Amino acid sequence: MSEREVEVAVEEELLLPRETLLSAGVHIGTRIKTKDMELFTYRVRPDGLFVLDVKKTDERIRTAAKFLSRFEPSKIVVVASRLYGQQPVRKFCELTGAIPIEGRFAPGLFSNPLHPERIEPDVVIVTDPRADKQAVEEAAAVGIPVIALCSTDNEFSGVDLVIPTNNKGRRSLAAVYWLLAQQVLKERGELALDQSLSVPLEEFEAKLESKE
Amino acid sequence: MGPLSDASAARGPLLLTVSMPVCTSCNRLIQPGARAVKFNCPNCGEMTIWRCPKCRKFGRQYKCLKCGFVGP
Image (cartoon, rainbow over all chains, first blue to last red; front, side, top):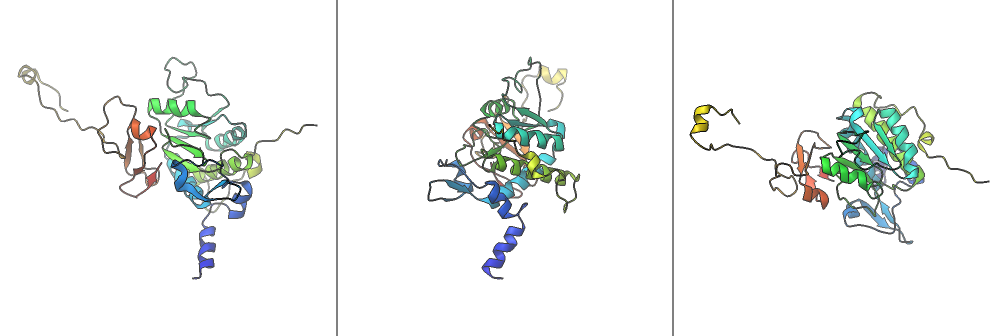
C-alpha cells in the first residue's frame, strides 16, 4: 500500500469527511498554545495560529461518546456560556435528553444544597473551560467528571476528558456537537451504525443577526 | 468491616482493615472527604479511575491500565 493510499484509508475512518471538518474550522486554534494542549497541536501556521490535529479531535469525540453513553441521559449536563455555543448545546440536549445550561451559570447550582434549582448531574460537558469556569469549579467541588471542548489556549485544570477543537467558531461548535450527538446515539443503539443524524448540521449553527 | 460485638468492644481498640482509593496519576492515597473524582475509563469503561484534587487541579495525566488510554 502506497503512502497516499494509507492516507486515504485513514481519512475514511473520520466521522465526517476531512474537507467538511476543515471548512467548519474545527482545526483552527489560537495564537496562544498552552503546554497542556501541546499533545493535540499539529503545527503552527505562518500567521502564528496554532492548528489542531483533526484525527485526534475525531478520536476524542468517539471516546467522549462512549463515555457519555454509559450515563443516564437526564444525568448529563451541558454548559455553554458562549453565545455561539448555546444553539448547538440546545440541539444536542434535544436529541440526547441531556440538560442544557445556557448563558450565565448560577453559582451554587451543583454545590449548594439550599439552591432552589439545584441539579445533581453525573457528568458535565463544558464548551470552554475558561468561560465556564464556575461550572468546572463546582463540578470539582462535588466530584463530578468534566468533559471539556478545549482550544490551544486552554488548560486542563479540573478537566477529566478533553476534546481538542476550536471552541470559539460558530460552525466549529455546531460540527462538534452534531458529531457528538450522532456518536452518543449510535453508542446507545438508538441510531444504526451506518445511519447519519436526521437533523442537518445547519440546525446546530447559531443564527447570525443581520444588521440593516 | 464487620460489626463490633459487645465483648470485642470491651477488649479495647480493634485493628481494622480499610482499603483507601489510590490516585491513578500520582499513586498517593486519597483521604476520605477529599475533593477527588472517580469514573470508569472513558475508552474501555472497565477500570475505575481515581483522580486526587491536586492531580485534577494541575491537569496531570492518567493512564488506564487495561486499555492504555491516556487522559485528560
